[in-house]
Length: 617
Image: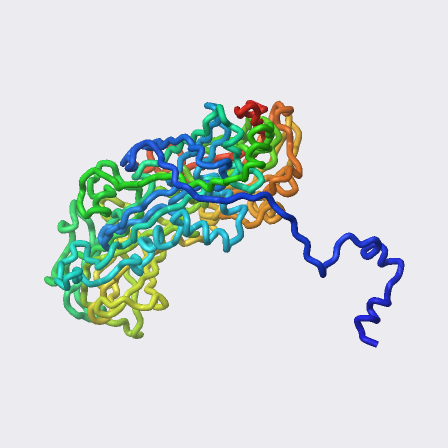
C-alpha cells in the first residue's frame, strides 16, 4: 500500500478543524476576469525656471492635463550635469540627492491643498517601508548611488577618473585635457524621484480625473538652491614642523633645535645651527557647503570648467502613469460619487534642543503613526541633509581628509619600522582638537600609494619638540591622502555616540501613553514590529496601528479628542563651546533639531465633478 494512501487513511476528529467542509483546493487554479484598461506614462511639462538658483529655492508648477481617465504613479524627472573635478578641489553631491533636492511638493484640488510631501519624509518612508533590494533600486532612481557622494571623500577617484592629462578626440588628435581627465569625474544622468501621494500606493486608489470635471488638479514643487546640493573640499587646519633634506642618524649628537612659533611659518625663534633644516607642513581638509562669496566654489566651475554664474538646465517634467478605462467603466466613474481614505503627513519642527526637553504637539484627526528624526543643527554647514546621526558626516564616523605636497628624505628606525613624529599647532590653531589623536595613512616609498593595511601611527599633541625627537623613515616618502577618526574612550564616549538622543516617553492629557523607553526601543523595536526595514540611526517611530504600511486601517488614535499631547525626549549633551569663533556665541558647539512627521487619516470626497476634504484642521 503506498505511503500516501496510509496518510489519507489517518483521518480523525481533529481533521474536521482543518479539512472539514473544505473551501479551497490547491490543485485547481481559479482566476477572475477584469475590466479592460490600458496604461501609459506621459511626461507633463512644469512651468517655472529651467535652472536651479545658486542661493535661493525655485518653484515649479503645473495643472495635470486630462490625458486619460485616472492617474497613478508619479515621478519628478530632472537632469544632472556631467561634473569635472580634480584632486585639488574634489566635488561630491549630497547623499540621497533626489530626496535632498525636494523641499516640498503640494497637491491641490480645486485650490484646496490636499497633501504635502517633503523630501526628508520621503527619505524616511523609503527606509522604513522597503526591503534592502527595493531600496537599492530606489537609490538608482534618486541618485543615491555611492559614487555620486562618496568617491570624493575616500581615495580612489571618480567613475570617470583617469590619471593621464591628455586624450584623443574623435579625429585621433591628441588634446590637452584641462580637467586632467579623459571623461567627466561624474557622468550626467537623469533622476526619477517618486512622488508618493496616496493614489500612487495602490492601483485601487488611482485618482479619477473623469470624476473631477469642474476642479483642476495642480502640483507645486519647491526645489532647494544649488548651494545646498553638494560639498567641496576646503582647508581646515595647517600644521608646521621641521624636517631635514639630508640623511642623518637620529642619535648622531647633532645639536637639538627648539621649535617655537613666532609670527609666520618662516619666522621661528630658537637656535638653528643645522643649515639644511627647513619647515614642513601638513594640512587637514573638510567637506563644506559652497561659500556664496567664493567663485571657485560655484557649480559652473565643475560643469563648464570656469565661473559664469549659471547652473545647468534641469529639463524638469512630471512623469505620470495615466490609466485608460473602457467606455462602460468611464461612465460609472464619471457619474458616481467617490470617497477615498487618504493619508496626510503633518510636519512639526523643534530646533535647538539639548538635554531633557518636552515637546507639545498640536495634533488632529485619527493618527496611525508618529515618526520623528533628530539631527545636529550644524549639519547645514556641510550639506548633510540626510545625516541623522551624531557624527559630522553621514558615514558612521567623522571623516577629515589629509594631504601634503612635501617630499623629504628620512631613515629607518633602529628596528626597521616606521616611526612617529609630532606636529606643532600654528598661530591660528594654538591648540589641536583633542578628539583627533590618531591618524591612519595610505603611503608608500617614492610617493607610491600603498595598501591601507600598512598604517602609520601618528600622535598629535601641542608639545614643542626638538629635531632629534622627530623620527623619520627611509628614503623618499610622500603621504598621499588619508582619513582620520576621533579616538573614542570612556571620557568622550557619550559625546560621540551614534544617536542624538537617549530615550523618551509620551503623555496624553498629563497621563503616560508610553512609559519611558531607551533609544533602541524607538529606533529598532518599533521598526522591527511594524515596518519592513530598520532605518538609519536617528529615525524613530511609534505606531498606533497594527500594520501601518498597509492601506487597510488597523488602528489609530483620534487626536482631535485630546487636549494635550506631549513627547518628552532626552537629548545628548554636546561638547561645550570653548569660545571658539567658528561656533558663534552659544553654550554648545552644536545642538539638536527634531522634526515630527504625524501620519493621519482623512477622507477625500469627490462628488458632482468637484473634490474636497471632509475634515479640516
